Length: 508
Image (cartoon, rainbow, N blue to C red; front, side, top):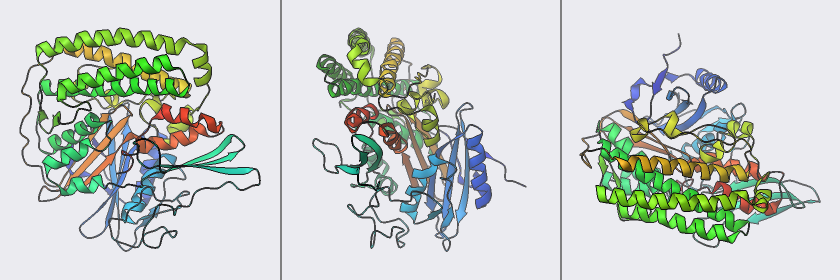
């Protein structure tokens, strides 16, 4: 008799023992069957138990039902290997590589088993990578190569101009055509997940805000939701509303900034300047709300630290109405010029089938016709009461990824104007109680790049013993590789900007 399935919802916590432990064959079959029936792999991660056994958890998202099927299997310490899901389920490939790197478990049959980041595994076992004597090291990496007299390689990075983190892009080309792009990141490996397990709650929230510097509100909210769930802390409608305001301002500033970056890349400077100015306006609103242009110190477990009074709300409304008018004018200029459309349309195409197969999320997925949005599918907080329609485009090219940003910016402005008109009453911050022992909690937030997922597990003493973070960039870097395949290498900067993924959010 098969164990009964366990389902979780966004923002919930549950006793860890309620998750069934399946044998390897059943675990493998349940995942493949679920995904073949419309579910997707939201998360797949490992946890090292006290007896040195490795527990692997899978979370299958049933987006239409707003719930996740949670299942697990256990690998004995003496036999840390399992049959890889990747040959039949490509969206599992990065998750399995990450588990191999973190816990020295072997996904047998994985077709692309390489390190994701550079660090020693958490089990303190001999590493799996034969290319490195003790652990993966920068510069020692088995890049894919195309052989032939007419094939050549182009290497970009890992050192870049500006302030972005290290990242290496290895192109295999035939003339100007890109045959393959392999992206290698993880040079910094900040160890955020392990640090959150080890530091105090007051410091852990600062780490959560630093996961990706341009997604402070998104990751900060996810961490706070985890802590509130584990302590049964109810936050007020007012705190939920102000968090949602901050999240949408963060989305607006980044979407508008990306449109400006795309304008710069194609040499259309007037909209680049105007989009840049409007990005500054949204960041200034976030600064007036929180005291910081990126929203640091606003979200805290139990609620928020800063209020938005009636006078400020009215001022925000007036400025957003002006910004909406200005944004429409400059977007109309950008999206109606034939020279712009000819550069964006048909460039960097990711098909709907490819996006679905590889598990892309966020605007990158919605630009390829995948209607995934946590705010709708797994609504929590203020999004349970004020709905934001999901925007999708079918073409999957740079134009689609730009258009999605414009459509979502309009939706966010409408949401903000509505919610600012009548912010609910309530306390700003409640004090969370002690964390529940032997519990697991899940938090999902639709950040501006897409689906953010945090998972935390506590032990019998209520200490956090596993904290798992998934930034949307973890899903989407492979999408960039697919977008440039078969195109001209000169299209890479434009494709890269159309995704605008995070190095820091990937390098946990």
